[in-house]
Length: 259
Ligand code: ADP
Ligand code: MG
Image (cartoon, rainbow, N blue to C red; front, side, top):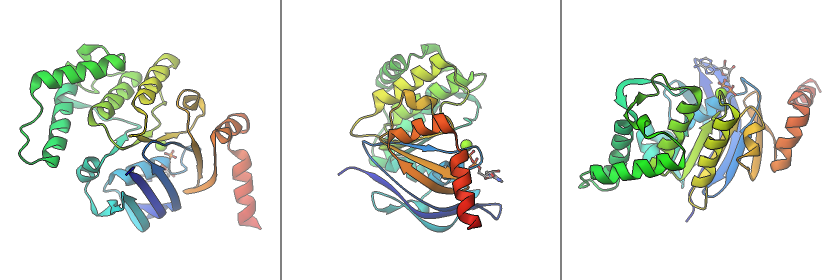
């Protein structure tokens, strides 16, 4: 059965300030959704909440993954269920190479599924890593560098996609994977996501700009404004935004409040 991420009436506060005010969103394995919205609308808040960041307090609503209550689970448990988040601002970890980080992530996933697992043999891990780096057009030297330390914007995003490729999630949330990328890096990262896409992967692409959606084609588009999803549609909606911006939605929504 295909995995489904279901968000129902989600309310989230940060430092006591309500940010998300009743979000409903369903992403199934095999589907590609885009969550768009202006800066400050709450997109990253949703992404962090999905992954269980402790600063984001869920005050109402539910999130389930295959019917399992995600809100009861720690971030690592959510990851093991098959949820992946690519960060908008990936952190640098000095002293930990990208290869080491990935090997630990892959092995802890295997161990969670089978407590007797001794980890992926190193030659097999190296082969897997090289294969995935080749398809993301990453230089192999990358694997030996400290995670994100001194990486350019494009390299950081590629490293995030490499982690996604290695962990093989069922549902991946990509928060502003396009930000800070030049057009070539954007194309390579998008191609990476497209190659990973298929019946076993559901993707939620979070973006401010329509640009990445020229490469990653969403079947569903959702627009967030002030912590709520105010418009939904197909790929045409992203094109409409490209042309008209977010103002028509701001005006419409403030009109509703004033009426
Ligand atoms: P987006 O990703 O759509 O740009 P965010 O989710 O980052 O939006 O932010 C939504 C709102 O929540 C903004 O008004 C932002 O200032 C506020 N916010 C987000 N994170 C925090 C935080 N850690 N502390 C205080 N306010 C926050
Ligand atoms: Mg954001």
